[in-house]
Amino acid sequence: MAAEAAFVPTAYGLGALALLGEGVVHVQQYIELFHGVSWIGPLFLVNAAACLVTIAGIAYPRTRALAALAGVVISAAALLSLIISYGTGLFGWQEVGFRAPIVLAASFEVGAVVLLSAALAARAALVQPRI
Image 1 (cartoon, rainbow, N blue to C red):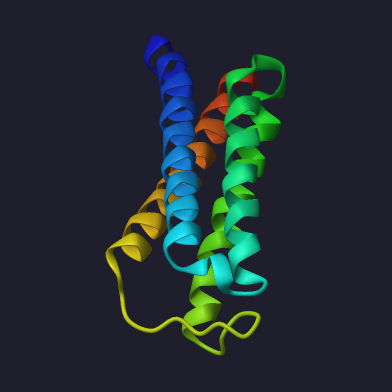
Image 2: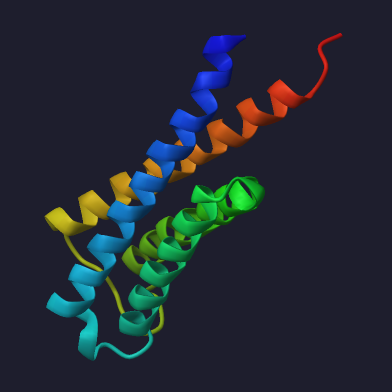
């Protein structure tokens, strides 16, 4: 039981770090490339701000679970947006090729989804009485 209890805060913490990485890459890409792209550029900043607010929520125990759920949604939405941008395009932007920041951002996003989902599932398992 102690191992399961230790897993939850570790997964929350690593998930928050993944969100931080995601936000940093989005800010860097906004500055480097997307600052002049209508819709997409501002969405990169919205993603970074949402990651920052979510990290703050994860740091506070009373909002941790809700913030973790928000982190899953934010990262999953970013991944879905990336996938759409490679296909039909997103708000007039169509991505081509794989740049290192894309791989890095996608890795952080997948990590955040997996880690925060695992933290929420483990937390739910710990609070539920075993039958």
